[in-house]
Length: 157
Image 1: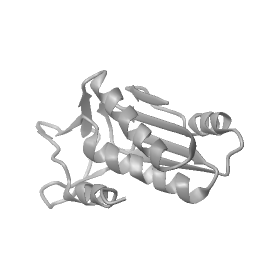
Image 2: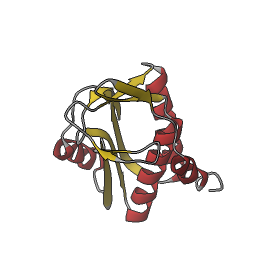
Image 3: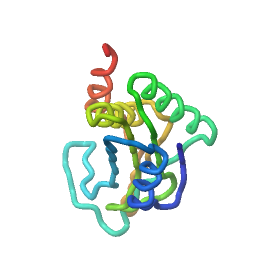
């Protein structure tokens, strides 16, 4: 199941949904992304203030299709019993939850690999645009080299 939403989510509820959907499961792996308090980009990091925000834009329909394609690819690579992806959009503040990826499988390695695969592709291929704001200053966040490097490891597998 895939959700693109502005509302926060409950880790406990999402875990229980995965467990219920998966049935006779051997492993559930979850990942939760948090909006960082430290912003880099230009090399100098600073602690976020109460006025700092991260705004995520997306194209409804296009984004959900992209996420569904990523999940479908993972399901073809690993024997998954259930998958849950939630990505928040809109204005978020430091320390708020931004993304949830959950995978369930009969075996732990399949669940771990699938969750990491989904997250790596989500970071690099899903159509989200991030704008970081601090007081009067704001800028669009560029793609990170480390995200492309993480994605590259799946190209040969």
